[in-house]
Each structure stands twice: as structure tokens, then as C-alpha cells.
Image 1 (cartoon, rainbow, N blue to C red):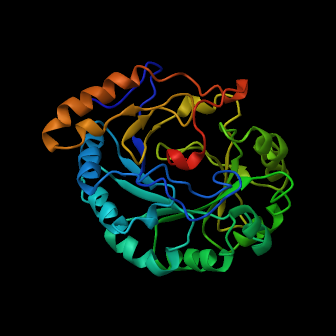
Image 2: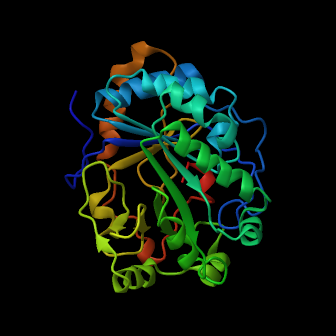
Length: 326
């Protein structure tokens, strides 16, 4: 099968697959009022997930990140990991988590086949962590990261959303932490969503400010490889960890796009912003539908736009990042 490719020559080998909208944190930039279900949601079943993974694996997908909401809230989370791990076409299996269940489950998830993990830690100050996430779970999350290091994950990343007036004073503390801790620390520039104009205006901080400071302090830019996401990564000879900057408002941010998204209810999203998504669920019910599903995927890539238009103030239809897995 030919690899998924759009009209701009971009090839897509990375799928972010959401398995639930539910999250037990109330992060101010994502779900400030907490998760509010619309009726009784019916998220993708294990059978639907397996058919989805099989089809994507045959059109060049090599990396799958299991996302949410908080994916580990699904009781069958380890089974989902195994489905992805058992597919010979998928070379990299990752997840993004708030770390709430990481301490108890890191080894189990590793044994199921998970190899890379991103943990959201928006501040190393427990009080600010509580203020941003709505949960007083800082110590539990940090113990979870230690458990992941002990379990032997090949790559651990810690995500922090840059928030002016909240965690923007934490940079020295973060940098000191990764001096002896071999993790990738990633600062993510706040993105405006449909529900967050006032919040965005109050708290947006450009990642370029952080980049200039890193360069002044001797951090060196790492050339990207094919498996990298959108982050610009930096290393320092005195630090075991790396720093990555994700700056969606930067020039040419979309030029290297290599990822697609499927929501927890089976909709394909060509971009985190701009469109409502295309339903795939009708073609996920039986493995015999694979050829038709692949044909639909190829057809949709022709609709992918060149950029997200965030820099022009277009926030699209995405109400909050938990709705399609961030």
C-alpha cells in the first residue's frame, strides 16, 4: 500500500490515537471546569482500535501515540498497548499522560509493549502545579516519572505548557532538574482554542523568548531526525536531559507536519485545528472493510491544508485540546 501523502509532499507516518475524552485533571488551559460528558460517550472499542491500527500500519504509519483525555483512565489501557505492540508495522509506541496512574502501572505498561511516555508537568512548584491542574498530585506524578525511569522506557518526555504569569519563572528550576535526569523536557507554547481567547490573551508566552535564553546559556540546536515531532530540540554538555520547544506560531511550523489524529469516537482530524473531522467509525467494524478504509484515508489527505492559520488568529472548531487528543 502507498504511504499517506498530501498535496504538499508531506508524508504521514505518525498517528495520535485518542482512546477517551475523559480526564481527571482540570488544567486551566484545557479543561478548566473539568470533564463534562455529553450523554454517555461510546469510545472506540478494542476491535475498532485493532482495525484502525491495522489500516494505518499498511499505509506507512510507524509511530502511534495513545492519547486522551487521560488514556490510562480506560480499564483496558494495557490491552490497547498490546494491540499496537502486536502490529509489526508499528515501530514506536508512545503515550501522553498526566502521570496520575504512572507510579503503579509504569512496569505493567512497559511489559505490555509501551516504550515512550510523555508526562505533563506544568510546574515544579507543588502549589503552582495544583493551581494549574486543579489537583494536588505533584508528588504522585513525580514518583511516577521515577517509576518510568526504573522501568526502562527508552524515552521519557516531560511536557510543560508555557504560561505567562504562572510558570514562566520556573525555567531555572526545570533546567537544574534535567542536569542529572535523562529526560526530554519540552516547553509548549500556549495555543488559542475556541473556548480560550481571554485565557490566551492573558497567558500566552512566545517560545522564542525561551529559545534566545537557551542559546545565551550555551544550549546547542540538535538537527532533527525523521522520528522527531514538531519540537526544536537543544542539548548542553553539562546536562543529561534535553530541552525541546514547540512553537506553533513560528514561521513554517507546519512545513514538517508528519502526524494525523483520530479522536476517541473515531473521527479523522487532518489538523489539530480548522475542521470538524471525518467519521471513520463505519469502516472500523470489521477487518473486511480495510481496503475501503484505506481508500477513504488517501482521499482525505487531498483535503489537508498547507498550514493551521493560527498566526492569522484562526482557531478553528476545536473547543479544547482534550476533545481530539491534543
